[in-house]
Length: 117
Ligand SMILES: [Zn+2]
Image (cartoon, rainbow, N blue to C red):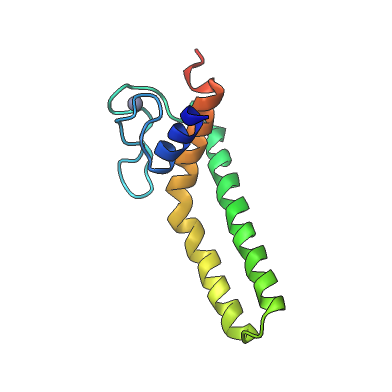
């Protein structure tokens, strides 16, 4: 359990789960193909980017659902609440994009698929 928490935490922090030193991203939205330290390939197949997208969409929808539940169960004015929620729903996935992809790399690492050859 401790290993899973460590790998997922480092993945959220965009640190290579294999060597625990290399950075996953070289710029705001450009992921390194290989770890600059241990040379492991982060996303072996081109379709693996969809795993990070799925995590991002799921968390964004969860925020939207929680916001909707709050909107329908409180006396907060609906229009400002919905405008705030819409702003969060637009900004959150952009901010969390790198972390979602990093988290997916951590999941790939934990399943052992990162080293297939
Ligand atoms: Zn590495």
